[in-house]
Length: 82
Image (tube, rainbow, N blue to C red):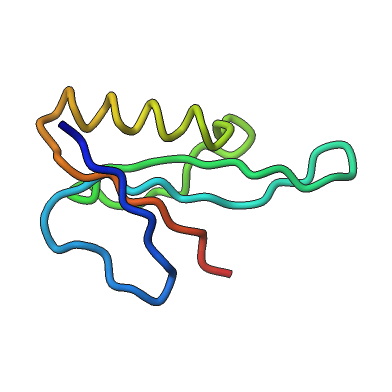
């Protein structure tokens, strides 16, 4: 089972391997939309994939599936640093 943890920017990330979902705002047709990408903490954050970021709900589901497929027990959501 995969636990989803909602983490504030000022709280340290877990030290054990986890999947991080990075949520950020993207301007689409003049309005801000929450988008997200995810990464494996053991491989590092490479900044997502630009215009191919997912909507937040889809990113969470994909991150949970990735974690499950790779025997990772935690998914941590956090807002992108400014």
